[in-house]
Length: 273
Image (tube, rainbow, N blue to C red; front, side, top):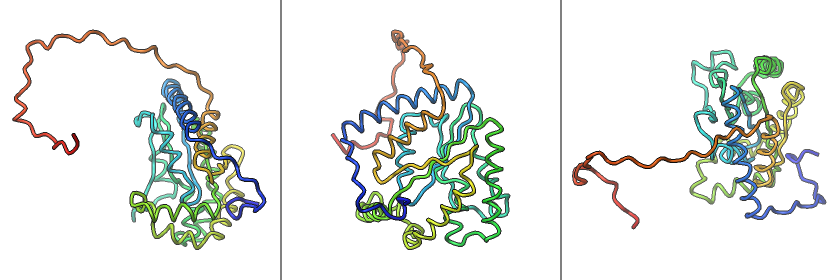
């Protein structure tokens, strides 16, 4: 049974990952991500990673840990908002194509063209004809991407209804996270079954050999982050081409430079001593 519908009551709970173990493993993986970044740039790879799943499934947290130590000029995040009136008249995939990577880049899509198979389908933002066109066109679109030399990796974050409810409540109670809970999220909460059916139909059409879905069990945020990053690293064979540490030369003399008086500059007040 899909964990998104219900977790079996007799299923044994997985152990919690201690904070120290989590932090140490995350640090190790982030070092490997830096190595992967260097390999992508050196070899001119074009990498696209899609992050899809339920609201509050933890996609943003994983993306944040992936990019935390990387160069934003090489690894960038794309999180598109509501399409403009002009974009609504374009070929559906057009506005996503504009954000695909050039050689030596990795792009992480925080939600992607699969919006049409999920939120747009459930909320009625697209017609049935548009939805069916997407389901049949998407595998061909992704085949073209892969055949062009692009590396495409798709993740679906699976979270139970109980855990999603707990996270929604946490967002309500935390002033720094309230912005994450939109009216759309609340609406999706009442349409759990519809989203499940839409996801199943999406998988039936788009979980294909040349672009398979990889499901991340996401009830545990720590476990999901470590598992997802580990899997991402395993998907792209890379070597450590980190250059030797730079030896800093001795500083040259100031050459007679005199700094202007500090009274002529405006400083930020020192709120904290």
